[in-house]
Length: 290
Image (tube, rainbow, N blue to C red; front, side, top):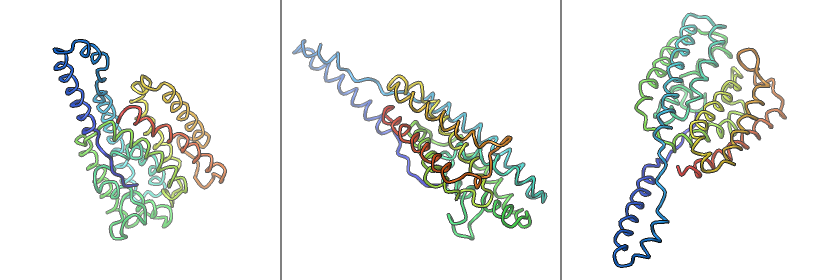
């Protein structure tokens, strides 16, 4: 969970469009008295602003799909908690969260939903603490589902509210690029310490989901990036592949090993590879002009 401010690209795009219109009018006005000058301007007409409407539509569809699955799997998890099925609830916890982690930047733009769903023990006042990590503490540290029924019901309601709001969110390419970079930065700067899943140690599920969410954004914007900087497009693609291969070494069955099984060298290498990917990924926005 984190907080951020995302600056929209609308003003920038509008400025470029108005600037382009103004130059065309100036060119037309100058053409009558000085024909040679008009011919020179025709060769320097500004390029039109890129249209990312198809990309944002594609990402919105992905976010809605993930959110539908998030609600479905969260309901299975909360039902297990309310039924007192401790081991089943523990098995369902991390897989349900993965759908949320893939679209976390979207949830974080919707006010209190992110802290309500994903706050850790010290992120909010104790009286306001609820969501996945509240229940995580009960399951792993207290080793019981007793007393968690109300938190389970509220978590499912918050997940359903996220699903209801996600179709109305104001998405743009800037939010997508910023979200992709912040997904990786959050893993590298805080999650890699193991503080996210303090009780369950299921951090690698979150890591993998964050990387998958960032990669989805990259894949959507990749064709436009390839047109403008093929070298950067190739570099980012290769670093995503290398990071996923590294995470793959920690797979166990359908999930991942306990995070406490990693030694310090493995954690350091993971953090370095995350940083190595985040840096070129942050340049994607500059190249695309978002």
